[in-house]
Length: 463
Image (cartoon, rainbow, N blue to C red):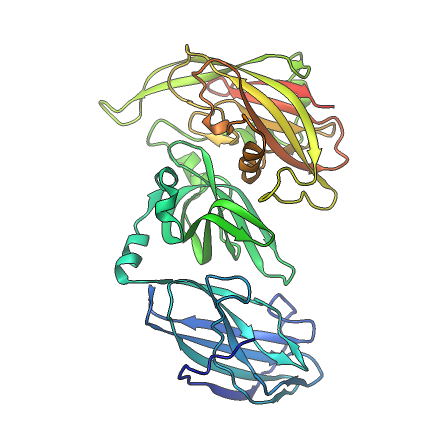
């Protein structure tokens, strides 16, 4: 770790004894060192030239003394726009050896100047018995703006479609984006730190268009309306891979503005969300497909409810309804551990990516909504939607973040959400599912809404 001797720092070291023990968690290392407190204070929003202060409290929860090395001592590890050792901004080195007895705690306070704009990352730094502390353990992030004007601009929310009309204009900038949370994944890294990966859909167009990644486990669930604030990157390196069009957020960067449940209950626009996940249920009964189970390569007609709207005399007034018809062909299915090349991820132990190659065709006779095919399991006017089931009736939904790699790595393919239900002629696309490696009788099922509580199914056995 590098030292930053040029800064003027105020560092205090206090020893105290705490009574009682805290259950082991992500903030406690295997040797019993607990990060009892980790607080960051700065102006809101943080601006270049401002000051940031960190307070950390360590507690020895073991029954053995813990020896901190005197060089560099305890300090605040910091990086600017980096998840590696690049752009090191470590500060607050105590430069004193310290023996932390069982039950004792040590408090470190340190301040630094925010000299650069971007995403700053902070975590506790130390050498303990000759070993560095875990890299990015209990990390927290702070977004620093170049000026108050930039901070104000970043706080004005935009839609997903607005951002992606000209992504280069927003590259490496702080943005606030409104959208629907889709395929929300919450997990922990090797150090036990929580992270969340989700996709954002445009609220109006219901198209899956970009990813959001950051620390913590926000309350967001599939179908919630959310406000996301973070740094947008056209190319976002993360680990071994680089992802397209991603917002990296810090703590508190994902805020739920309306839950999916509230969206279904409130219908002020005559356009309630239709949640196909609740219609299908688990396990899925393949008997619903009945005689509409077709072989690979067959042209399968799919009917769906369509509606046309007008904004007079009231917004979203239904002008007329009808039935639309499209067709699908399942060309082939393949299993891979890594579906694409650069930018795609491994399926994981006991899992496989099942890539289903499709051809879709619309009809010029169709009118109104929906305008495109969907991979989403819900929407205001859901178009043809696809899910996977197996011999046991398990239900799998398409893995949205993998859609772009598939369409990038297979020439002549188009993203499903960009294929119009009103244009005739076959267009190649693909949908992808992460399933158990030993899945039996995988079957792709197309479901379409017929209006009211009526739905139709068509299926293709993939093996």
